[in-house]
Image (cartoon, rainbow, N blue to C red; front, side, top):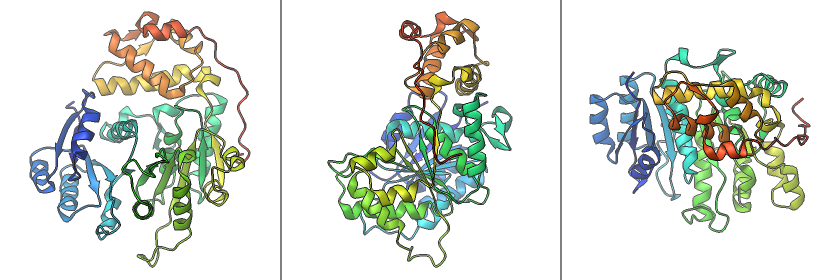
Length: 396
């Protein structure tokens, strides 16, 4: 199977180069970058594109590129990068961003971009290579058979089609974004994109690019319109500066003057902390909290469900094997026993990192203890923390 092709097209200075740099270590990808949408059209006529990364708002040339690439490959995945900074910029092409599968707001964490690219390319793989639950592909990060993870799946299936806002709470490295995407996928009535806004913004400068409040308002306006008919996922909501909380709360209460019948928008959010503690500390607005948290879902920590490690490791190794074009990898019983004795402070993200490193260090199909990274073998004997998780009050 030929490696998937990623085409990055952006006119914003340095954006295409930076995105390509973030992907250059992914040997399983073929990454191409251009700054001229017209040149990209000619390229797309000659070459198959599996993932198109494109700057928003779309120019007419970029809009034509998106249509052409999708004609050439009906399974094309499209990732939009919303990077408008000036309020006076033309917004007339907002409607065409509905062709995006996902949208990221700049600035974003580098890992958010790379993980989104890899996730979208899962759709490029044959459907038979993905686990399917209830007719919907299941993210490997949510694999497991413990009572805790099964309860989470039940709540996702129950809440997915409902018109409720969901706040997802979980440890650092837990699959909160995957839970949000699963909720979005469970609602067949939603035709809009899944839009992600990473709220880890420097409070000292409002935005990493020193944006003014007017520019910040423009960006949030654009995101709310982009997510019409879909979902807006506010990742790390506890990090949103007070000024942005005020802007977002104000915009959520204002009707969209550009549309007589705006498509419904679903708000999903995630945090590593209990936002009720932030309310008591006065660092989070109560009105915005009540707007975002109709229901709370708690992602069970991996360290407290070691029985999920065999199935979860298998699902992650399947994905790693496909990415690297290798025969299916699996862990020995001794290796699984060592993993089960670890406390997993970095949750599922840490487990995937360990498995990635293990695959780089051996060419064997069966991964034993000796294949695990040396640093991990040294800390693997630390018993997991058995603290009692805080039960969600609203998700029963």
